[in-house]
Length: 126
Image (cartoon, rainbow, N blue to C red; front, side):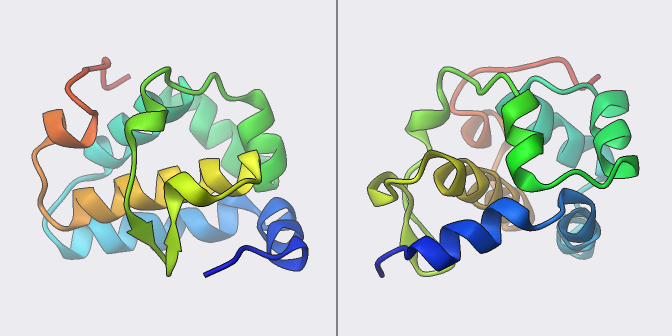
């Protein structure tokens, strides 16, 4: 599927705080924990649990969320299809970063081992 400019704009202006409860619900329904969700977010973005909560409270957009992030150097190892899009073929950096997060959360919900989700690297679970 081709990512359109309209799709990229919709992703950029979507509030992280509006999607976060869906992420949490998805992983908890599958027996994973909020702590594991935050570990995945921290690995990708460098955000502590507190920083993530601050961004939720401020109701920042995904554009602001990822502008403040320090993307993990191994993020490019996240490959595959999510929401009908092949991640490694997405040419808009922000849309690709959001899909990285979606893919990690999907893997967490599917029961994948944490070391595999974090591409063989660990981070503290802040």
